[in-house]
Image (cartoon, rainbow, N blue to C red; front, side, top):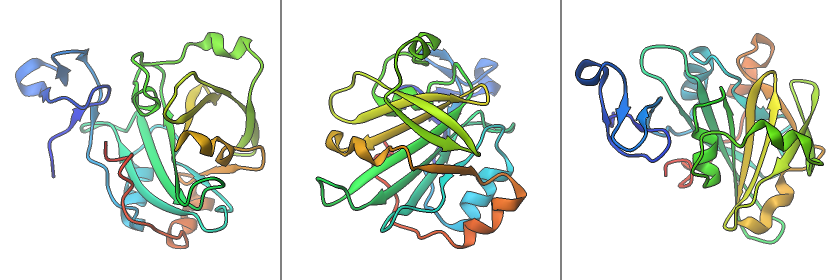
Length: 208
């Protein structure tokens, strides 16, 4: 298994044994980001059982879409951020990709996939009109679009945690829509879904 990398820049890290904490030369103390894993049910189940944040899954899955990988932060403790990737037919493109991230504030995984330099979008986004709304664990969840040019990036808040949805290519922003419903597969009532999910090859965007 490859060594963990910086959650923000994917650079190499100094280990807690040598630096007292996972440390990046550019960003200081950070969460270690583990390698992206294919979407086999056991990888998803392992991520769900060791996560302190939701592992979001669209359900029902949009027609033609499949899970294409999972990636999480953390050393020996529970994950403070988890990203799950999906692939499917786009509206304007032959294939679209979507990465959904749940994370604690200050981690920076969602921001890195959105192409931002910061760790968080800032809670001031909630003072603006929202651009989309999905349902997360049964709760209506507003999302705000972010000013990035080569992908569509949305962020919202669910249960005090950031919820990011990043889509490629940028014209496929409509894959994040009001009818999208997310369930947290950490919940016992949703664990059975892991054996039913359609699976695709590992997402190249998730592995970046």
